[in-house]
Length: 170
Image: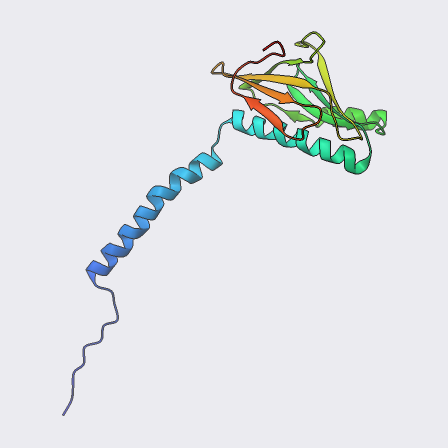
């Protein structure tokens, strides 16, 4: 006497539909988030770079007991960092390998509290060994004419970001 047992080695159609639906639902919510992170616009990238660089320079100046300078070339749209003990060749290399802003972002000017705005040439922001820095506002704009202002306070490690053009008189 032979018994025929039917073996269930596969999945039913209902199980396959449920699993595919769950995976599709997961991708529906995950893919837009990945696109936002990967394809974020240049304004956000530049903002993060400036804010993190200022924070890092304040910390590094105290840690290394050296004066650092953030140079902003308003003509070539480039930012770079130097220190007191760099040789002339190292200074040139730092300027050549600095952070070049994307084409759709422009450095408008740099403003100091008691001085004229610098909108042409080069502006320097100093970070001192004691943990403070120059007070300054960096203004940038993008192709959509959206202005951003980065307020660097002397005794605060964080940079304040304003989504508009601000001045010290404000």
